[in-house]
Amino acid sequence: MPTVNVNGRDVSARDDWSVLEAAQAAGYEIPTLCKMEGCSPLGACRVCMVEVEGQERLQAACSTPAFEGMVVKTNTPKVREALRTVVELLLSEHEGLCVFCDRDQDCELRQIAGNLGIHANPYEGAKPRRRFDDSVPGIFRDTGKCIKCRRCVQICNDVQGLGAIFPQGRGYDTVIGPAFGRSLSEVTCVQCGQCAAVCPVGAIGERNQIDEVWAALADPRKRVIVQTAPAIRAALGECFGYPPGALVAGKTNAALRRMGFDGVFETNFAADLTIMEEGTELLGRLAAQFRDHTRTHLPLITSCCPGWIAFAESLYPELMPYISTCKSPQQMFGTVAKTYYARSEDIDPADLVVVSVMPCTAKKAEAVRPEMYSSGYQDVDYVITTRELSTMINTLGLDFGELEAEEPDAPFGAATGAADIFANTGGVMEAALRTAHYVVTGRPLPGENLHVKPVAGLAGVKEAGVEFQNCREAWSFLEGVELSVAVAHGLGNARSLVESVRRGEKSYGFVEVMACPGGCIGGGGQPRMTSDEVRLARIKALYSDDEGKPSRASHENPHVQRLYDEFLEEPNSRIAHELLHVHR
Image 1 (cartoon, rainbow, N blue to C red):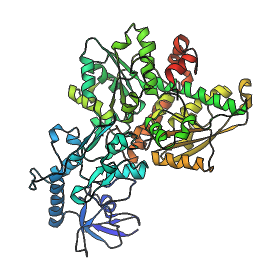
Image 2 (spheres, rainbow, N blue to C red):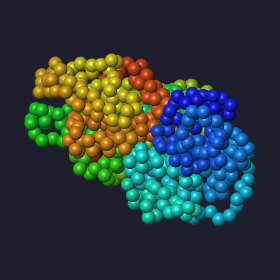
Image 3 (cartoon, rainbow, N blue to C red):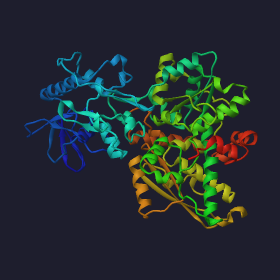
Image 4 (tube, rainbow, N blue to C red):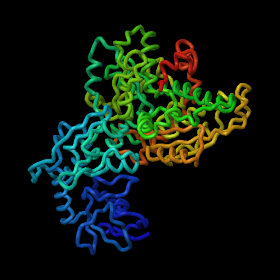
């Protein structure tokens, strides 16, 4: 462990540390606009330059290795002058207009400029040609605000394995975007929003639907209801000063009622419904293979994540028969709301507006897919992200911290603990196994506190096996069968998993894939920045929420049971398939 001196303070550094990490260990935060956790340092922004004794030129702290006896200074006149010049040059090409930018106080470039006392730009002149790309429903690109830090390039290429955007051109003419000047709609962009989540400025963001939601709420002819995804409760609080993982579902419900929603529900109810449908689909495929000995498509692959679905459709179309036909919980909720709920409440579905609060920008694209109109209307009308909801709460002037917790409305408010963990990588898998194991054996899923621990955590690809023992008579053909399962999060990891199966190296019966690192808790619409520490805090909170519920398996939800009794008949029935499944 080399000893490094930072601003007169010695610190023991690890052998693989950079100067940036050594400085952090010494208690100094060096600004940077390009460095990201888990990605190779680029040294592209030049904001993190420091003086290293014995070096004539300033060095980029993020990409300079620490070594024994190194002496580093982070705040000399030379460093401050260089940093100020670099930031002023970035601002000279940046189409600021901060007062109109949704990043505003959340802009990393603005924060650094403010810390340096930069209040005017001395480098006035020509700016690169600006292009605004809103060709896809989920996200936008604004090249005029791009500072070419390449964070979006790294996340799209190195983490997600897509390569939808890349530096085009050279020097002053460099543009970050799809090849040959194309728009996002012309390349394989799954709209996961991870680029928007890491962009330090406002060059990439979600397609905002706040105005449309306010307009619907103000329309006396409309009945406007809202659903909140499981991930929201563990992340929204961060927008109001709460630590990552603070559970704020009750306060969120209270805020939504004060905003004027006529019904405040949770997507968790639809997550339980999804498990009933997807679990039944899984058991049907297992019966075909082990009882009927007929050809079936195994593994069954989960279908809750629209980013993953878009990825598979574009790059692995041969996988589509293996992917569950179930709609996502968001879309199941929308369909049931505009059929069962509208009928129960005597509402004309044409006057019912369904709003979703999601951690995900790809959900905006999912809502307008042609197969998502099975109610006879667009099942989900508007999708706003966690960040958009926080903006709306601030617009209304609500003191979020002072709100008293409130329960969601019936009948779509009650959910089990299995629904809470849907937001975590491995959560959908665990929720499905809880119900599938009970159906087959009549007993709860074995293991500590119902958890399938091998599929939890942030390992990129996780595996487990669940053995069926002492099966019910109707399921005796599964006696002794071990169901091999796998979980991948982040599309780069999903690609690795798929390729290992294609090569015959791996074989599974059930697979869960989520496009975003950590699952929905790390979605592209969540509060920035989402580090692994933040992901783990959100995951821990949702597992805790699950463990505190009186019912922790989806088949135990009495409101879901009532929905089947009164409307859907049984899981995978004709009407359930018509409304809750897609037909490829």
